[in-house]
Image (cartoon, rainbow, N blue to C red):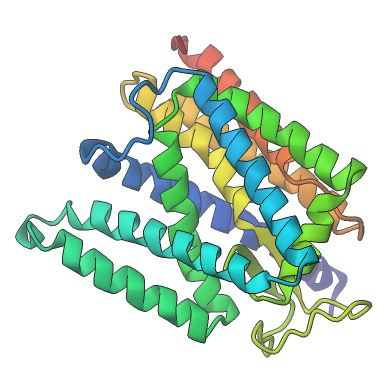
Length: 297
């Protein structure tokens, strides 16, 4: 095998992860319109920065709950909550998409329930990497759209900054994020993207034993969701005619941050993803704002 082929193989995971992030962002933009039309926003006033604090408190509370559950060997509770969250998210995704089909008017609710229930059961019974990746895109896009339409640009930027700081502290300082990730990996929960290193890889057969070489690359869904919030929010709350430079800037900035993050990760050391991804999205967004002259207030 030539050196150029080796080089391409080395960078294929980076390109694959970038592709997944891009798909999530595009799908979240598609979902945002029907979700907004159907009034799926979480808050009445999306401009309140306090909404961002609410999400931070929720994340911290859930993190504490997971750490306690791991310590008390009650991982089944974590699984139950995660699958319930997946079920509800898929329901919102399918409901929003089905409202775009006039011939299914009145049937959106029952079809969404059937689809979300069936696919959640599929994830539970057969959590193979390609099933997780495909549905992970839907889940990540759904969450991105739901939160993105619920927070205007300023609250989203505040949220992304706070999450980036929290992620850095939890990975580099307290390291509890690493503890949490290692504690739930054996549950094989569909809360991450998986890029296999070879064709015969099976996530179901992955043992996650300490010291073993990983046969795949992993990225948490949150790394795709968080920067996508700004993409959706910019599209919903900033007026634009034609191409939206703030949206495009946030998307390109996310990808740039991902490339830098991936290069560091490939050196073999765990990295906090959000400082790179969120910073890229924010910088790209403001670059787009400057280019377009759009107002963010």
